[in-house]
Length: 114
Length: 115
Image (tube, rainbow over all chains, first blue to last red; front, side):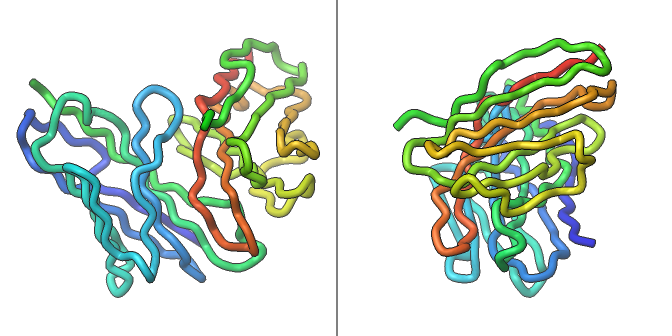
C-alpha cells in the first residue's frame, strides 16, 4: 500500500531557529513529491521535486529529494512567527490510472514562538 | 490570475440530507481533484475530473459523486449524509496535459458539519 510518512508530527521552535522537516515515501511508480503549507484553510504550494529537479530553494525555504533514500527534507532557516503552520508532503504517481491523485502524509505542525 | 474558488465556505446539514459543493478552477486549468480532510485521516483523495470525465477515483463509497462541466467547473455531491462526513472538502486544480502529474493548487475549502 502506498504510504507517505512525515516526521516529526509537531515541532516548537523560537524565532531565528532553523528547522528540518522530513518526509519519506513508499509508492510504486513515483513521479513527484510536493510540499504545501497550510495555515487556515487552503494548502499553499511550496515546491515540487522530481527526478529532473531534486533541489529547490525559495528565500528561507529549501527542499531536497533523495530518490535513493525515498525521502525529502524541507528546511526553513531563520524562522519567523509567520512560518507557523502545518507543512504537508504529498507524492504523485505516474501512469494514466494515477492522474490527479496526490498521496498526503499526516503533516508536521510547526509552531514558531517569538 | 484568480485562484481556485469554492462555494459555499461553510455548510451545516443533518444526517440523511444531501449536499452539493462547487469548485471553480484557475482559468485555463482543466483538471479538478477533490479531497476530504479530517483530523484523523488527513487529506484523502476523492476523485479527479478532466474534460468532463472522471479519470480517477479514491476509496470512498458511492454516496460521494461528482461531475465537471464544459467550463471545467466541478461539483461534488454527497448523498445520505453521515456524521462521519463532517470534514473540510478541498478542491485543487491543475493544468495537466498528456497525463503528466502537474502541480495542484488548492481552493479555500468547504467546511461541512453534519449534525
